[in-house]
Length: 80
Image (cartoon, rainbow, N blue to C red; front, side):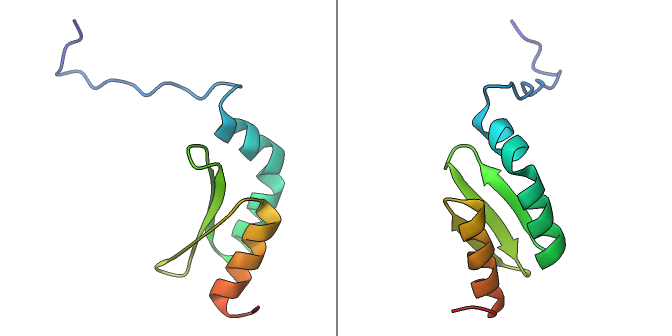
């Protein structure tokens, strides 16, 4: 039995983890979005979607990184 006074450690991501795979394959795109648009962007392995926090309280999502860029631009009011 595990000692409840000792915090459990979270398992490390594995190579088969969809979030790890997506971040590795699209990492440069997400890095560009973070730098160019000053947003917090990430891939949600449980939803299978890409997400970004725009400004102080605007959450946007998309199925692909390119779609996320458009969603970010719309959230900032730069696109329709």
